[in-house]
Amino acid sequence: MLIPEPVQSLIDAFSRLPGVGPKTASRLTFYLLRGDETLSVELANALAGLKENTGYCQQCWNITTADRTLCEICSHPQRDPAQICVVEEPLDVLALERTGGFQGHYHVLHGALSPIEGVGPEDLKIAELVARLKVGAVKEIIIATNPSMEGDATAMYLQQQLANRGVRVTRLARGLPVGGDLEYADQNTLLRALAGRQEMDQE
Amino acid sequence: MAQKFRSFRVDAIVLKHHDYGEADRLLTIFTRQKGKLTAIAKGVRKVRSKKGGHLEPFTHSNLLLATGRTWFVVTQAEAQDSYPNLTRELEILGFASYLVELVDRFTYEEEENVPIFNLLKNSLARLDEGEFPAQLVVRYFEIRLLDLLGFRPELKNCVVTGNPIQPESQYFSAALGGVVSPQAGKNLQGAVPISMPALKYLRHFQRSSFDQAIVAKPADEIYRELEILMQYYLTYILERGLNTPGFLRRIRRDAGTQAE
Ligand SMILES: [Zn+2]
Image (cartoon, rainbow over all chains, first blue to last red; front, side):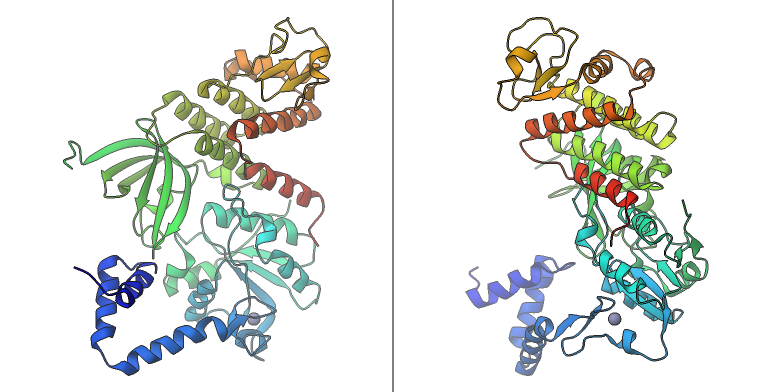
């Protein structure tokens, strides 16, 4: 069966998304083809605006709207700037925010150290984190990297870099199963891990 | 495409993993039975997954694999050794990554090599136990791995003249795969100097079991010289740089001076 090029190209685009196989991609495409035109237009507008209208918060590097320098959390008067929770990805911020159990600020590294893949400290927002300590308000850094080899490597490196700077450095408790991603943790598990966070050993 | 065995058990060491799709991971494993393989572990990034902890890099696990369309699929996983100390100290984590990167880069899929499997498993266990200097474990691993891959360097006779090496400083040529006498080496392109003590330890590691190798107590500067020399030789054979040595250099530098 020959599929017209515009249809095939949307199917191809969908199949490149995580969790979407060729069957789902075809189903979504034909749904849009048959469906109301407003749906396609809204989807197209949303996609076109996604990159254009978003940017990074210049303090925590989380995703925010393109018109702001600081994200909503960083500019919220009720959030406590003395605590910074360090995560690998923006989705981890979302997971922690869903728990409602953390009132401080965040810092998004945009990845984790991986010696084998050649991901080094310069590839992550680590210098930006260290720079935030110089402003002075920070009392505790909570490292919430994933419980994986890369998350451990990142936590140890951060601990080394943040030691002797007059801030308390803690890591989420080991309630999270090894190999799991923070973004998939349920709220109770995350709350427990947050409450049971432990000091990282000072060498 | 009828497969005689749809499912089979392997003794595997996880070399590396990549996130794949929504919650899956694509694993590169080195197995005792079939050498290096790529396998997919479904749903392991979900926190409720029971397999995740058994599939982290460096872990020695017993796996049940099914033959999938593109990759093997991990259907059961049970860790034999998870070597917890490998991820408790940054430099040790870097060394373990280095061993795993070498095995990954030097091997091809589905080529069985039991001695390499054993060497990797034993070396990771030694790094984890921490009874012997990590540098010794790693340098011993390199020289044995070269042997098992068929790149055993010549350390007794000059690779240019064929004459026995005299007890003095020498050169080493990666292109010629061995030591070069001073006269022949000084004008040889690409040859690098090697001190007599460094050469002595290389020879010792080359002919020894690990139990014999540990009687050697090289000074720190000899370890440094051997590290640079081996990386030069390994990179030459691979025709490409390795990632982990740069990581190790960086974390050592930053351990001394906190990054600004
Ligand atoms: Zn922010």
